Structures are given as C-alpha cells and as structure tokens.
Length: 210
Length: 71
View 1 (cartoon, rainbow over the protein chains, first blue to last red):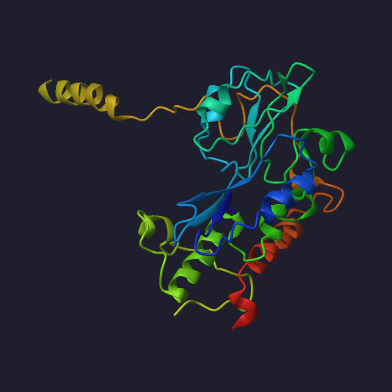
View 2 (cartoon, each protein chain N blue to C red):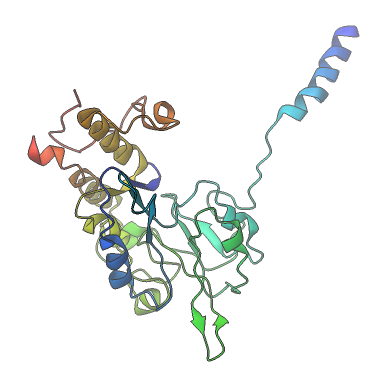
C-alpha cells in the first residue's frame, strides 16, 4: 500500500459541505473546531470552484518539523498524527501548516487555547484502537475498521477522494481523460501521469480510460 | 599521487551536493516522544490479519470510482 492521501476534484465539488458535516458528526468534533472546510474561489462569479481542505498528511510535514515537544508521528501509511497528551497547545504547528489544518478548541471561561486538534484521516491516535479514550481525544478510528475517512465516503459527487495515493490519482486521471478537461493544471504530467507499475483504479473489472 | 589528490578534492567538493534530512522526524517516528500507536490491522476487527485489512481498504478505494459501476 502506498501513502494515504486526499484528493479533491474541483470540477465536481458543489460546496454542499457534506464532508464537513460527516467529519463533525463522525468524530464529534468540538464546537469552534473545523477539521475540514470547503473553500470557494471566485465566489459568486460564474465558474467559481470549490475544494474541500483539511490536513494533507504531508510526506515531510512542517508541523512535525516545528513541534517543540515532538508530539507528531507518521504511521506506516503516511498519516500524520499527534499525541494530545504531549501537545502543549503552543500553536507553532498552525504557523507552519500551509493549509491551516491545526485547530485549537477554546477551553475555559476566558478562551484559553486548548490542545491542537486536526484531521486524523479517521485513523484515531496513539490510544488503544477503538477505545473510548481514543474516541474522546481523536474521534473514530475508521482505518482500523477497514474503512476510509468519513468525509470522502460521504461525498455525494465523489469530488473528495481518499486512500492509497496511487489508486486515487489513477481514478482522477481516468475521470479527466473521460470528461476531457481538468488536465490544464500545472504539474499534471508529473502528478497524474500513469504510475510506472502497479496501481489500477479498481481492484477488479476495472476499465482503462480511452 | 596527483590522481589521489584529485579524488580527495572531488570527494570534498561533492560532499556539498549531498542532501541531509531536513526533517526532525524519521519516517518511523524515531524522534517522536509520545505513546506508541498500534498498526490498524491489529484492531479487534482484523486481529493482526494485514492481508484482510489491505483487501478491505483496496475494495473501499476502488468503490470510489463510479465509472466501474456505470460503464
């Protein structure tokens, strides 16, 4: 298995915020924290485009690099997670993240900044898988149940894809080839060219794009 | 002697071309100082069967491609 990644297809996203709702509901995310959000460019202008953004689970994550207490780790699937028991809520990761993924819940009557909270790729955290402690701190561990993140699985237009990076990029490549547009973006050839070996869009009866 | 000197000087200059790891964390989390996380296939659902977990994830991955259902 390659590294787990998210991919949002701007041609398909209809800004329904179903992914945001699914994330909030599945993980019982506290009030004021948005692990995922939908960003719209050129809002109100014909041809506006929306994309769903959360932690991108970077391969060389800047949040991990700057954390003063080394509370981040990366799983063997490439998911970037952190230990909330170690987090001091300093907010340094928020400055480092290019996507604004780290979120800080307000705690206490005077709005003290709580421990960092972010998208876990529905992979929980360093507590026992499926335990109440893990759910309370990090939300549901769907990956340990053999499921993909709730945001992607709930996406009605399948704009948001999640999973094995090779497979979802192959799905996206096939889509763009069929619909005939969307390949004009910079870096298309390097990012969505056919992988040298391995990945297919589906495990069985997949059809290659014409 | 001249050849040896050339190799030594080249090695010194080429050492500047190396790319040291700029991340404070290693891939397997060696610099991470928190609790150890279990692998997802060791959960109660899969009980250590990585093949079954891989198969389940692969199936879910493929289900995201609706062209397989419509064409």
